[in-house]
Length: 485
Image (cartoon, rainbow, N blue to C red; front, side):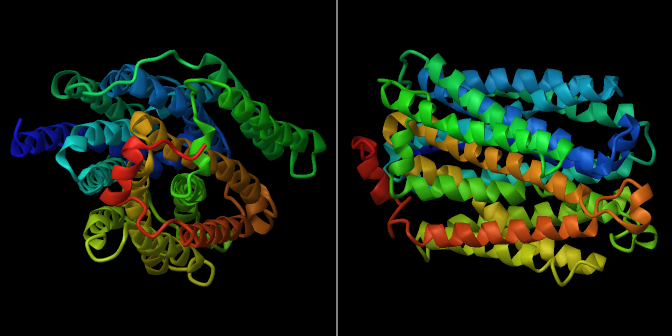
């Protein structure tokens, strides 16, 4: 088969996968302008919106390692189909309940969509491996996929904002479910399976151990939100979750075909990427609900907030995700002039600058918009770059696992941040806010400060990555050599 034909095959699958990411974007952008309405419909406090985000992120953290490993073993397309089916069923269930715990379960199951991008990157990488420049091709494909994702987020946010005031909430919530159902058939008829599958036996023991660790960690953080940061039992459960990682790691080191090869974290290229993904998850996943509720908070009543309507909030979010498209598309362009490592450092720095600017500049709509655009450009670049960088640095047989781990670690970071931010928003509520449902200003300041500082740490970590990491030359080396053991 000629290179042109092979390249055409890659381009074709990217087109179908772009539709999948467009649908993913709809899910990620559609609900954010509606969170206040959803909270009122469910009869919960603004800060309790973080329960939705936190539980979805927790389930996502459990799902991604298993789905990514199964993708390498039995087929990335097959796992993409299964995760799309689960997401469709969960999305279609949301409009038909106003019971909080039922809504919470469906919302959590909807989180299966987070495995889509890692599986897609693995599909593209498997097709581009024979073309001689898989890292560059995957970076460009990742930029296009993330651009489609963010376009979907814009479409979702603007559509939700426009429909919120003219349709009943139940009807408005039905639209994303229909979109995911269509997406299932696009994958079914338009995407072919990866050419190289590893087979093997699934590591059920590893999945159980890591699930127990993650459940204890996130469960303890949830208890902290309920009982407060002074509760010793909650801290004990959090500590248990951290300690359970030790037997998991020891167990995985003894396995011939582990669920997660923990040696990957010792790779000089992959280790910092995973840490960066976790730190990045704090802002890109944990801060979105607080940004929405801050915009909707009535400044006349509480003394802070933007007093924005659903439509104004959707425009704010639309500008943010548009800037993410710019960042995603600029990243492969930037790597023509600087190494991927330097481009990642620059992207992390933009996220840090954007969130730290919230500290002095959060009083006006234009200030908040400017901050979000700066952070959005950096975030878009990181969303596209991290899984592509992991694919380039991973051993050939663990592409899906490595790209999945970037999402898993990012999701864990987001889940922890979501719980911590929920506690922060409930703390120090005073004045008029005591009788209302808005989060505290000190809580919002905590959100911005944590997001900014974690991005600073990520940029510093990337300084220590090998200079030529994530390039095609580096990818050629790891394609035939195992990670340092």
